[in-house]
Every structure is written in C-alpha cells, then in structure tokens.
Image 1 (tube, one colour):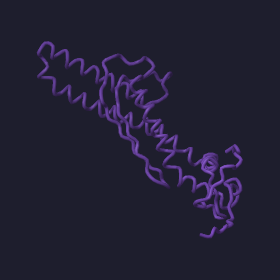
Image 2 (tube, helix red, strand yellow; image 1 turned 45 degrees about the vertical axis):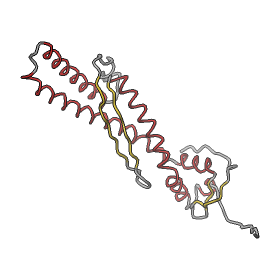
Image 3 (tube, rainbow, N blue to C red; image 1 turned 135 degrees about the vertical axis):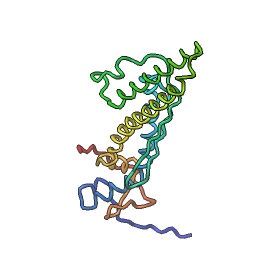
Image 4 (cartoon, rainbow, N blue to C red; image 1 turned 180 degrees about the vertical axis):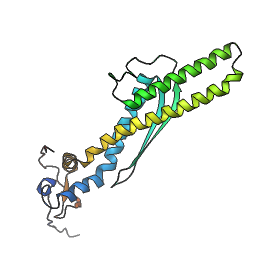
Length: 206
C-alpha cells in the first residue's frame, strides 16, 4: 500500500471569525454540537427543577425536556405531578419581594389550595360525612393540579429558553471549535477527518 500525503487548505475558527464566511463556521458549530449541548443543559434544568420544586413547593414532580434538531432547536417541556406534600410551604414562596418568579408564586397558591381541599376531604372522611362533597372537592383538586402543572411548565420553559441563547453567542461557537479541534475550509464548512487541538484559545468580548 502506498501512502500519499495530501495538502489541504484549512483554517481555524479564529482565522475565519471576522471574514464573510465566519457566520458559516459558527453555524457549523451549532449544527455539530448544539443539540448535544442543549440536551446536557436540559438534564441540569430537569434536576434543578425537580429539586427546587420539592424544596420550595413541597411537591414531587417528574420533568421531561425534549430538544428539537438544528437549526430551530425547538423544545417541549412536560411535567408530571407525583405527589403534593402536606407540610406548609416556605414563607418566601409566594412573597413577591423574595420570589421574583410569578409562575412559582401562582404555583404556590395552587399547592396551598390542593393541600386545603385534600385536608377537608380527609376531615370529612374521618366523620363519615365525605360522600356529598367528595366529588366536588376532588374536581377542585384536579383543577388546581392542572393549574399547578401549567405554571411549572411555564417556569421551566422560561428557564430553558434563556439557556438556549448561549449557543447563538460567538464565544460559544469559538469554544466548541477549539475544544473539538475543528478545522474549516475557506467557506466555513468543517473539514471532516482533520483536527487541530493545539489552537490558541481567545476570550471574545461578545
């Protein structure tokens, strides 16, 4: 077998950054690494949401975030209410001065209503007077649970939307290119099979 040396014209992202093809190189990074990056961010948002919901709202939830593909990176948030605890909520949950998230404030009100209605049902059951009102109260619990789910979805959606912005930043594209050793042709397309991990990193003030 004869080995052949092939010379190619290759550029680092820094060399293309401010040229007319710099946008293509940045889009290449979004295409190659955007979805993976957002899926890892989604795992963080899911973990934080489940943890803080339990701590702040005394409510156990399961969260799922599905991230769409390049170029739109649309996403879908799904929340399942597992259980609402009976313990009182922290005082700062629905205090506008302490908690700036309007969705969490509204969610806290729904949790308190669910706790109240459930408490009434249990009290009526204890004296065997629950049958006339049970259906109505259970409907109210169901309505508040759906409202709670909606508010949590809105809160998590906003949190994740803010995080999506990072992949449109110039410094994110540069960081991915340097970490992966990506080399580009003169049009800003990644050259498959070639890499340079010795690229000098630069912090862009963008």
